Image (cartoon, rainbow, N blue to C red):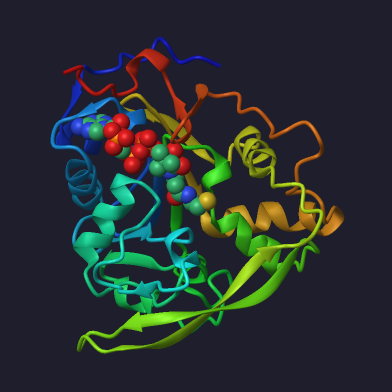
Length: 292
Ligand SMILES: CC(C)(COP(=O)(O)OP(=O)(O)OC[C@H]1O[C@@H](n2cnc3c(N)ncnc32)[C@H](O)[C@@H]1OP(=O)(O)O)[C@@H](O)C(=O)NCCC(=O)NCCS
């Protein structure tokens, strides 16, 4: 469904972004984890820092902003040293801006750390979970704290929290492994460090998280609205788990692709760009770098 009736602004300021985020339903005091595409929004004055400013403005001093600081590709290099203060997030410009501002408030995991800013930041990043997708992991804490997830211009295929369901319900297509690399401690010392990671098992067909996401949208569980030119989706963590539980219990393959790719989303336009998949109001409103 195209939302071409929505007037996409030419340029987005912090206040305009904040107004759209409030209209979507984000409230002061929320615990909010964000997966995002900057270019989907259109032209943001000041780029990723402005988006983070807008999110923090809406969340206010009692809120908490969480970003994925995942770096699973760089962590594959045998000489990789995980430096919580400096290893970039590979999850986009907004995620990396959250990581930069969070400083040391980043969980210790070689491939799937998260960074957090605000009242519950320390509780989240120090959650003890042995794996990144355990119930007592930093991501699990977003559920524990009754938080919400924001997909900002991306589809449910970027919704990491669905991986927690795969693990919680022991869906059969994941296996555990231990990744051994090194960690730079705050005092500068580099020490051996290992993390448990989930690998895809033989025959894993790829996941179709859009299927569950679209079902949640159809049931009115997800709040969907434009933020600039991005389609934004706001999902309450616990309601999502309650909604998903009977479905994955009934069908352990519920989150897997069934042979014909992933389920199309009915709201907005889904675009496959070289850098990733984005979800927008108007393909013409996607940010384009000025030609030299
Ligand atoms: C991969 C992904 C990050 C790519 O999105 P993207 O918008 O192309 O990239 P970023 O968010 O990093 O933003 C950088 C882009 O914003 C654009 N940009 C630059 N300045 C901008 C501005 N002022 N305003 C708006 N866009 C701007 C540029 O196109 C830039 O790309 P370039 O550096 O190649 O020129 C995104 O599709 C995605 O999947 N995000 C979710 C990741 C995630 O959390 N996954 C969970 C684990 S599965």
